[in-house]
Length: 484
Image (cartoon, rainbow, N blue to C red; front, side, top):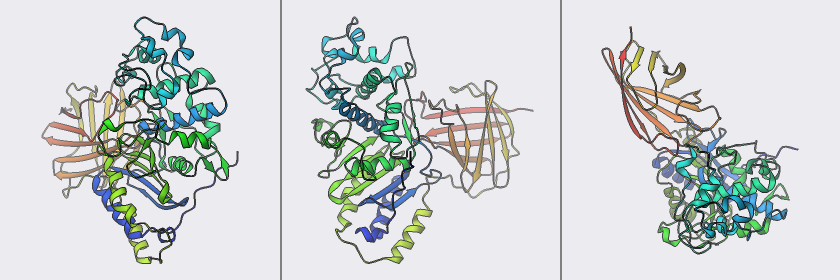
């Protein structure tokens, strides 16, 4: 297949966007802490592509619930191919599981439309606790055995398990995972490499989350949505289905949050700005389309308060846009380029030189099972090597910059992507080292503080956030004793 062409770039003023407005937007986003990447397009042209070091826009990043919008597209293809109908019920696809003891007849009557619109009748998502503690019982059985509090179609309850069931239905019908099914239909036409999508123990893509895409490839999906499903002159997504999927299908006003109570489509959210819709993943993963301004915006982030991104767009950025080209602004363009070059996630700061010779330390018992840590320090950085059950994890760091390395299995993150991390360090005092570690496939930043006192090492570690990986202790402490 001929590779897809890259999207064209344009100067902001050519598309009616003041460079100063983009500068102000970057300032706002940067102040929020933990933006990882942003691509902003207007009229199909990229006006701004930003990455916060050490994130680069080319490394696969967890999309969390933005994965749901890709499942929706897969259902759209299956409907077009007449493999599925929206009124089919779960009992039709899983008759054995639907007839198990403890399964309500109402569970079997849930339709694909109910699943797509988050109106399956369950009170919440029941699958999370079982994902990383597998049992012989399948997640399909677990889902069907969850209590039904209202008949399907009556009330909105956001439930990632419903998206998992859509993934399971698709695999049952096609014999392919949702990722495999989408590869020739969606990913390949957009020039997206075969992505990783986390699976359950039965080999079914989780659907509701678990898809990893680089920012640049996710941006192609956003532009596809903005163009009504067309790509390079061809209709890729079924146009009628996409219109339906991104339209108001389900009332969700009970959420009482500005951009989460404006209606829900088929695994897409409606927005408080009229006509806008988005694919939406935890901590600020967005594929956002604003039709009246012909804008398409893609983000990766690690923000606990992700709604602040949308508020900055609605309240400050959109009012600055014009419908006609603006005069060139060379000074603004230069300032914008300089601002882009300085973007960076929080890096430890310190003005001291270390006064520690390094060495090996035996660690006390800790939840992650690390037994030793070795410290080596050089003029421009150093290395920490963690030991666990005979396996070592060498972590290179730099002062005043970031060092990238592979650390698969370090925190048991459930992805085979290599566990790529980036580390930066600074001395708070001659015996206190601050170290930040960014998980480049995830939204997580770990902050370490190492205090060296004679033959003792005290370590504290804080996560900015974490999600479903068994690391429930956001704050942890550990102590070590120097070995001869």
